[in-house]
Image 1: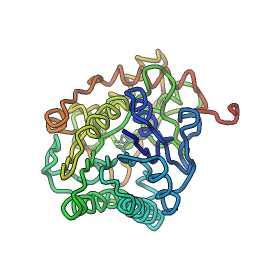
Image 2 (image 1 turned 180 degrees about the vertical axis):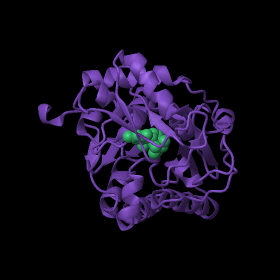
Image 3 (image 1 turned 90 degrees about the vertical axis):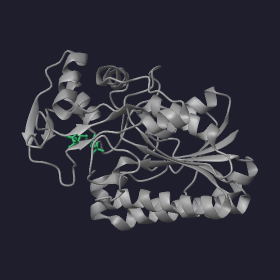
Length: 331
Ligand code: UDP
């Protein structure tokens, strides 16, 4: 298939683009490089552009004879979405609707969409099944949920085949060490802890140790990026007219913040000081996927089911790329 990967220079998108290319798909990455990295994209495969540039998106869809879109491009800082919701609604909602209209104009009707467990808000039950109510507690989650609804309506009315993949916590780096997690600013737990191990930060701050969990710290379901990529590929290959997939992607196992820090100490062999702080606003105590639906629908199994091997891949990346992709040294 000829696949357009929007946001394919970002963390999850670049892993998916690489996998699809290795499986013989013809890949074009469309990215504005606001957060993406040129170095994360295979040479000659990057088209620099903005989602909101409808004419350009349409031209690319047409010229490259795109069969399907994988849509990763989005802003994803939950805290910023609270303080600057306009930025999030504009980019994530208006930008995606513009992409969908470009697809309609050209007759592309298959899309795999990056959704999120943030669409569930504070879950009623853990592990979380897809049938649980989706009640986001921040604008970021709402922007993703709005697009899930739009896709369902486009599916009904125009016969689109789509997958909305609700990720839990993406983590780790590609097994071959080429691709990894490089956000600026970095807010995610595992890279922050590994930056402490590298001596780039003095300590990691633990957001709350009085949550209603066994050790008092928040529990998350960390899913390896390469496993997210294989699920995207499987979903893409399932899409045809009228197919609708709404799937959680996680391992089904939760790790607490304390357990993650301890696993990082073991993997790195370094002490990694941690300081307790109050809880972060809007952080649910536990988010763990029931991913049985994805397993069944996609015939997908995550390769990484334990936190330690996930951290090992991340640590290899951080050691070999202490300043991320470090684009200044690349041409
Ligand atoms: N967390 C933390 N200290 C940090 C960053 C994150 O204790 O410096 C916690 C956060 O409260 C959450 C978990 O680690 O419970 C994972 O956070 P992250 O930001 O990586 O992902 P999120 O679950 O917010 O999408």
